[in-house]
Figure (cartoon, rainbow, N blue to C red):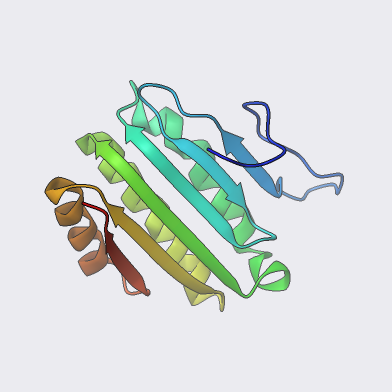
Amino acid sequence: MDTSNNSCNAEHTTTMQNEPPSLLIREASPKTPDIYFNMPAGMLLIKGRSIPEDSFEYYMPLIRWLDAWTVRAKTITHTVTASFCIEYQNSASGKMLFEFMRKLIKLHNGGVSVIVNWYCLDEYMLEAGEEYRNLINIPFNLIECM
């Protein structure tokens, strides 16, 4: 993942008290995806394999981060683009990604324009993207990369 000035696996903080971190970065592992969330830029990216040992433990900090930003996002950015390029996901990861998308719906309902880009690397991920698109009511692009 190219994040230019990122050289560590960290959850970055801001200097403002009671404000969620504006940047959250996690490097991929063989079982977990790259994460690059930058709320001031309106950019959320999840890329790679998603088969963590404990999907709840892996994804809940990301969901909490997005939930914390939902309150202030409209004052920071008017558009959020969430890009998912998942090579493979297990069923537990699929459930957690859906929970993440539910937070995107909340963000959208709060007045922020949200666009989901779901990159499909194979038929399995195309079907998963179609299922997510049918479950959420926000702009959702299926982008085939097969």
